[in-house]
Image (cartoon, rainbow, N blue to C red; front, side):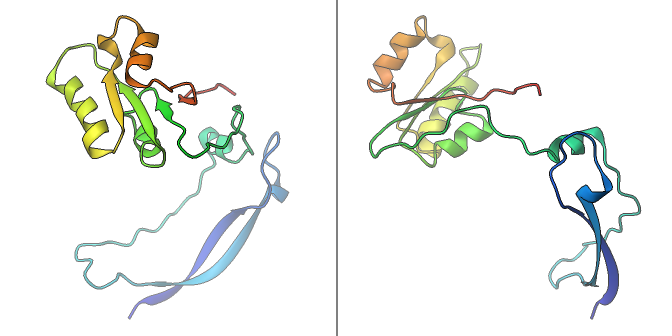
Length: 159
């Protein structure tokens, strides 16, 4: 059996517009049961002693929107993903009829592995190493004759 204890939660009531106000958050207290599930040998329970709202957390408390237009793909359209071997590119490849590129400066086994990974593990219809191409547009046309549908890329915007 576990021990029942008091648990405090800081709840975000409103997205922060400028600086944090007391009304943007509330404190909720509840009871929780401290019990390590069976089969979790070596597990430990951790107690937080302090809560800090660092500048990074403030950025997460704001209502931010993507600065990109939205769209809906029609059946049969192709999505091209630049940097497809990254985490987001791999996920996109699992949701759409997909074409992607990955790159490595060296003509190495690692570069070949990335392309192979996209095609054989993540289900991309086509993939190529863009670092080996002299003419990027020609490569797109060669591998993806209908690449004009959607071109996906990632940007980090300073706000």
